[in-house]
Every structure is written in C-alpha cells, then in structure tokens.
Image (tube, rainbow, N blue to C red; front, side, top):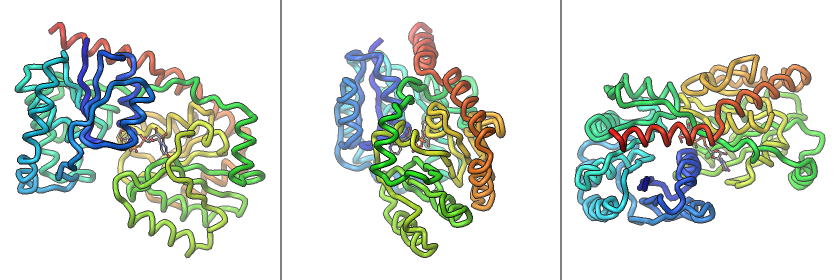
Length: 381
Ligand code: UDP
Ligand code: GLC
C-alpha cells in the first residue's frame, strides 16, 4: 500500500514524532508532504522517509481563528491543494496527521478519489480550539474521512461529543521502541557531570515551552521543595510562545531559583536525559490528549508524576505505575516530589511497574500492526 501522509508542521512536536514511527515501515511506499520547511524534514530524511515540502508560506488559520479569517486563507490554499491533489493520484491513501492537513487532505481526497484517514492528536474542545475550527475539523472528518484514528479514548470522547461520527473513529495509542529507552551507566555519569547534577534530586520536565504545558507549575512547586531538588526543563517554544519563555525566566529569578532550574532547550537525547532524572513531571494545565513524555519516562523506568486529565488517565494508575496530581496545583506536585525524595523503595517499585506496563501496552511493532490492519480494512472495503 502506498501512503501519502500530510502534516502542517516544520517542527517536530509529538504528533510529528508519532508520524515518523508510523511512516517508517512503508519506506519508499510512503511520502510525507509538509506545509512548512524545518527540522522535522531533516528528521524524516535521517529516518529514510521520503519527504516533500509543498509550501513554505504559513497558512493563516490559527487555533482561535474566526470564519472570516478561514475564508481569507482559502485563496492561499488553492495552489497548495492542486499540488497535493496531483501527488495524491500516485498513492492509494491520504493520511492527514494535523488539522490543517485535514483541510487540505479532505479536498485532495475529494478530487483525487483517494480514501482519507485522519489521525486525531488533539482533544477537540473549546478549551483548545475556537468554535469555528472545531466545526471545520468535525465536519470535514465526518464528511470525508473513512477512518479517524484517535490517540486516546479522551480524544475520541471529545470528538464524538463535539458531533464527530462514532462509527468511523478508533483509538490507537502512540507506539514506542522500548530498546531506545535503555541508557548505559557510563552515558548517565557523563551527562550528570556535564550538567552539574551530581548529588541532586533531579526533576525533569520534557515538553515544548507553552503556557498549557505548565512549566510554571513545576517552578512554583520547586520553591516549596528542599534545596537539593532541582529541575531540568527540556524543550523549546516550538510555535512562537516567546512571551511565555520570558515569563518563566522572570519567575525563576523572582523565586531565587537560578541555581535550581536549568533550561536545556530542544534536545534529541531524551532517553539519556530522562535517565539522569530521579522523577519526571508532566504538568499540563489543560487536558493532555495523550502525553508521549509520560510513556517515555515509564520506558526509562523513571517514576512519573502527571496532571490528572485527558489521555493521561489512560496511561497512569496512581500509586501503581506513577502518580497523578490535580492540574495547576503546585502544592500537590511539591508533595509528590517530597514523597519520591523520601520513599525511594516504593518509588522504585512504581517505576518498575511503569516500565513493564508501558513496554506491554505501547510497543511500536504491535501498534503499527493495528494501524496496518485498519488501513487494510479501508482498502478492501
Ligand atoms: N521532545 C524532544 N525534545 C525536546 C522536548 C520534547 O524530542 O527537547 C519530544 C518528547 O520526547 C516527546 C515529544 O517531544 O516525544 C512531545 O510529545 P508529547 O506528546 O509529550 O507532547 P506534545 O508536544 O506533542 O503536545
Ligand atoms: C499531540 C498531543 C499530545 C500527544 C501527541 C501524539 O501533540 O498534544 O498529547 O501525545 O500529539 O499523539
């Protein structure tokens, strides 16, 4: 089967990293079409996945766009759509991985007569999107998609609640290769040395810097923890959230935490960095659709504390394979950090349970098999 994947992003967020794992087994039978140039293209190339950038002009529809803005962007979409339609005719199926990709993919599916799959990585609720964008996404998926793959039950529920068809949606979790998350002791020592982490209790936060990812909650919690507790913030502002980055730096200096918070920027050595942590914190203040970082921490056999909402509740069972806290509550987070600092034996057992459950549930080979079966069903329908 030849698959034409579409993704709007030039940068590698979680949805893009998930796409790499899905497209890889198809080799030359896949093409990833992007609507922006950037480091995601290079990552695809490194993974030997064919990639083509279809436009470098930003599509002017944002998460909070109105209908008028939506129509204005149509003029800009026409040349892009005609290029995509032409290319789609060389493939058996169109696989849209983001919302703007769904808009382009739906029209391309209509004109090229190729079936459309939409991989839904978002919780389609008013908390995350404007009413207009929700309506566009739901209507296009209902009308044009043969299949919607939701990254969690939470994303599926929100889709159906917003008017999405329940007969076309299936839940498939992100898949991971467990082997990648094993790090040698020598690499751990070297990184600890480089980053000056020896003798510290390190809480890691791995996420793009964005207000709803809640890095500020971790910084507030840190101020309530003993001085040996420090935080590494791994990730960058991928989608222009520079104001938030500035606010985080101000917060750190106001709380006098300059020596206890390290901003490491975007990194490609996530398993190694997780390996030097004593605890991984997830602090999203809005419901997280899935939360790759949580599974990655589990695979690294690290205790994880996560914000109890959205897909996270399908990943973590409090007290068995991780800890859940109320989103937006630094005091509760500080409590869990202190428990992990003191109760090392229980915490180690929880981390071990996490590794075992995560390796069983999120194995990329099994997940890819599930997706292949779903795509096969569409083609033979
Ligand atoms: N990530 C990364 N480098 C960084 C920060 C994050 O490669 O500096 C990865 C992280 O390991 C995870 C993904 O980015 O696989 C983020 O996915 P997640 O589902 O946690 O959140 P998203 O950003 O997609 O909402
Ligand atoms: C999106 C979501 C994130 C999810 C990722 C992969 O970026 O925000 O929660 O883990 O997609 O499905």
